[in-house]
Each structure stands twice: as C-alpha cells, then as structure tokens.
Length: 114
Image (cartoon, rainbow, N blue to C red; front, side):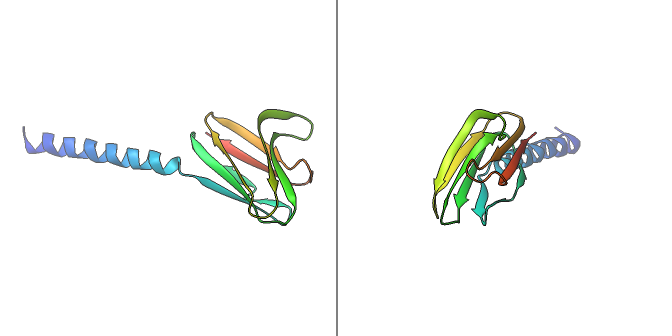
C-alpha cells in the first residue's frame, strides 16, 4: 500500500470520526426557558432525535401544547405547574412544530427539525 493510499484511508477515517461527532452533538438535549410569559428562545432549530426540555421560571402554571390555538395537533402537551417544573419531548421526525401555552394565548414558540 503506497503513501497516497494510506493518506486517503486516513482522510476517510477522519471524515467518519468528524461525522460521528457531528451527529452526537446534533442530538444533544436542548433547553427552553419559560420566563416572564415568554418561551426563550422562541424559535429553535434542532436535529432529529433531539430532546427538548422546557423549564418554568415563573411562579404560575404554564403549558406547552403542540399545534395552534385553533388546532392542537395531539403530539405533545404538558403542564408546567410552577417554578422549577420541567417537561421534555423527543422530536423524531422532520417538520415544524409550533407550540403555545393554553393559559396565556400570547405565549408561542416553534421548533424546526430539518
């Protein structure tokens, strides 16, 4: 095996490792804070398989409900009953996931999965 072949194999191996590291990083947990009647960040792009966790920093109850006020989509709904409460969901399919708080109609967010 010549030097050129060895270098080619090393580049392929390095690219594979970089690709695996990139995939692992893409599926890391994602955090959204609920504070002062807002989802922060309000929009988030995540990879398939990501786990998103909402944490309530307000003293009152909020919800995280997928869909819109006019049409809940039934994929996810959780109540965050006071400060420190959390809820999580794993997004497994590509798409756009709008969500809102059922108690406070102006609170809306969106998750995008390519």
